[in-house]
Length: 147
Ligand code: RB5
Image 1: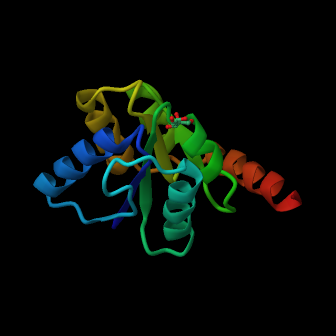
Image 2 (image 1 turned 180 degrees about the vertical axis):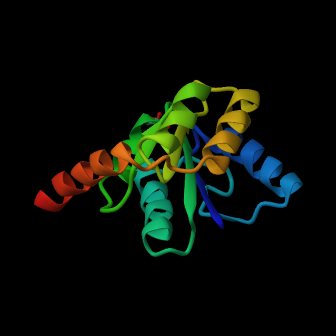
């Protein structure tokens, strides 16, 4: 599975830390920017990563902005995306188990690199539990399809 990474200037450092960690683990990724940390509007990056997931080019994504909020709102506008903005380990784990989230969003001004890397790892390594949660995720998709 290839991982899609993206960040605006507020999440650039956190994205770079996660990227270095994935490199050390030998996990394949595509970096959709920002490549410099220069100011960039987060919806542009959110769309690139979301499109990579929906097209199947990448299996899961990690997005970072200052809070994780703006970039997650933008990503969730793309059909088929379930982007969870998390700042704790428990939520990053359970959003895979129960929500089958396909993108994890985090805030570079909220979460330090140590916690962010742990959250990225658990998000990427945890499989969806299915069962009753399959129905609930299906209901989310129904809402999405009404619009
Ligand atoms: C950029 O300053 C900041 O607004 C952005 O990174 C993010 O926090 C938005 O939700």
